[in-house]
Amino acid sequence: MLKTNGPKLIKDGAIVENTWELLAKPEGEASEVAVPAGQVIVPLSVWKAQQAQLSQRSDVGVWLDSDELAEDIGEDANRFAVIGVNFPGFMDGRAFSTARILRERYGFKGELRAVGNFIRDQLCYLRRCGVNAFAFAKPETDLEAALKSLNDFNEYYQASVDQPLPLFRRRA
Image (cartoon, rainbow, N blue to C red; front, side):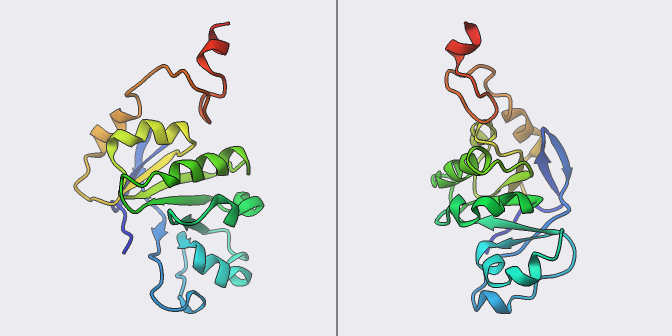
């Protein structure tokens, strides 16, 4: 079952209220999941099974599990206000690539939220891949301390979503 830290998360460098409900992956048929009213982030399987109904709503986001690809959303990415990328474990880094592809290939401009079991040490790198919101699975996570992790480093050699020019180009 996928859970988030609860009422607060880190978004755009600040601790804010979490106004979105994250639905867990269904155990049964995705087409039979009751999607509640209000801001809700649904699993990709639910979106695909109920796309006709859900696409009429502006308060629905989608989340991708680590074995699902950015290409599964593709050009439809910008129809969502929020896309979540799940970390089933902090050692599973596939969501880093998914985030970067959503930003760079598909031009996703909305909230890109890390959900699940990532760790504080990964925040700085996730931001470089385009993630701008962080909903920790563990409720005991110190969000103030985690917020400081966004600034663990201030210079990078490589280009990324948040710094498109490599260091040698920036110094030229």
